[in-house]
Image (tube, rainbow over all chains, first blue to last red; front, side, top):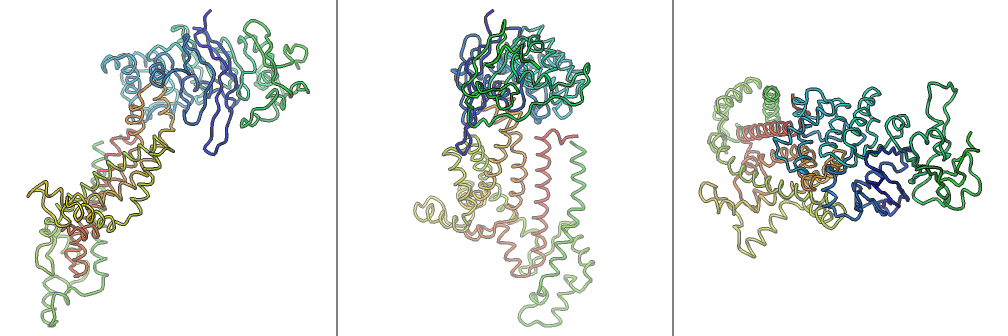
Length: 327
Length: 313
C-alpha cells in the first residue's frame, strides 16, 4: 500500500506581532492511503486545525513557519510555489470548514461559488460549470438544485450550507478531502445526514479523508484510523477499533472515559484534570505528564519514545503498552 | 427591489417636508430684518412697509411658509432680495460648476482612497502600508487652504502648467475647464481620499480574515480573484455609503477652496447670501443642497442593496 499522503515531522510555529512564539504543531507524522479515512481527535487548541491548514498551505506565510515534509502523491507540498499550490487546492486537495454560516461568501450565489471552482480548475465554460454545479448539489442531496443554484447563502439553513460546502469541495473530485469539524455547528439530526454524505462519497470516490473532530462518536462512525493529538503532537495512532478497545495512551484513555454512554450509569463523567500546557515554550518531557494519572519521574525528563503496539498502532508513552495500568 | 425603491421614494416626502420646515424656521431665527436691508440707507418707513408686504414678511410665520412652499413646488424659489435675480437662475448658474468640481473631487478620492486602502490592507505592516497610512494622516491633517496655496505656488507660479484661478465652463473648452478645476478638485478629493483609505483598509483587513475568504483560497482561486471578487465585494459596501455622504458634502459647496481658486460655485453663492441676509437665496441653496444630499443617500442605499443580496426582498 503506497501512501497518498505522507506527513513527516510537520512543525508549525506562529510568530506573534510582539515577538512571542507559539509552537502549535510539533513533529506530526502520519501516512494516509487512498480510500482511508483518518480521524484527527483532540481538544480545542491541540493543533488539529493547524495541521490541516498546514497541509492545505493555507496558513499565513507572514506569521506561520511551517517545516517538515508533507508528501502528496510523492511531491512535498511544502516545497511547492504558491502558484503550484493554488493549482492543487480546490482540485486535488479540498477542505470543508467548521462554520457553514460564515464559510460561504454572502455576496455570491451558491451556484457561483461552485462554478468558479470548476472554471478555475477544469477550464469549463460557465454553462457547463453551471450544469455540473446543479449535478453536484443533487449529489449532496440538496432538494430542487435547479432553484438552489441561484440562491444566496443566507436563504439556506446551516445543514444546507454545509452540503453546499461539501459540493464545492467535491467539485473537482479531490484525492484528499480534509473536513475540519464538518458537523460541529449542526443539529444532531443534520450531523447524521452530513456524515452519511461523507461516508457515501468515500465509497464512491475512493478519496482519502482527514476528518477532524473532537467528537469521538463521529470518529467511531466514519474513520478507519485515528490519530489522537495532544499539545501539538500525535500521542497515539491506531486503527479505529483498536483505539476504542485497547487505547495505549493515558490521554486517549481519559478522552474515552469522558464520553457519556447510554449503557453505563455513572454519577459524574470522568474529566481530565488540568489544561493544555503553555505552547509558547516546548515542554521538555511528556507533554501530558502534568495531567497524567500514571506519570512518574521517568516521564518528565525527556520526551517519551514511540512505542509500537501492533499493526499501525503506536503510542507516545514511555509506559506503553498499558495493559497492566489500565484503570 | 422595486418595492424597496418605492418605499424609499415615499420616505423622501416626509423627510423633505421636515427639511423644508427646518430651513424655513432657522431662517426666521436669524437676527436682522431683510426689509431693513433692502430698504437701503434711508430706511423710509413707507418703503419698508411696502417691502414687507411684497415679500409677505408681514404675514404670520405659517402663512409665509405656505407661500414659500407653493413657490418652491412651482419651481419658483423666489428672488434674490439684493440683486433681484430669480434664485433658481442663480442656482442653475452655479450648480454645474459645483457638480463638475464635486464629481472630479469624488472620482479622485475614490480612486486614490480605495486603491491605497486595498494596497495597505494586503501589504499590511510593510513599507506600502506605512506609506499609505502616512499619506492618509497627511491628507486628513492638511488644511485645504494651505494645500491649495501650495499647489498654486508649485503648478501655477513655479511651473506655470495650470491657471492659478478662475473657471472655464466645460461647454466652452473642456481642456481649459479641466485645467481650471483639477487643482481644487485634488485639494477636495485628497482629504476625502484619506478618510476613504482608512475605511477601506479596516474593512478589507476584517474581510480578509473572514471564513469565506479562507474558503476562496481553499478553492485554489487566484489571489486577484480572492481580493477583487470575494473580499472587495464585501469590504466596499460601507465605503460606498461613506463616499455618497462625502459626495453630498462636496455638492453643498466648498467655501474655502472655491474662494482660493476663485471658482464661482455653490460655496461662494451661499456665503455671499448669508452675509447679505439674502433669505431667499439661502433658503433656495440650502433646500437644493439638502435634496441632493437626501437623493445621494437614497442612491447609496440602493447601491448597498445591489451588492448585498441579504438586503434584497
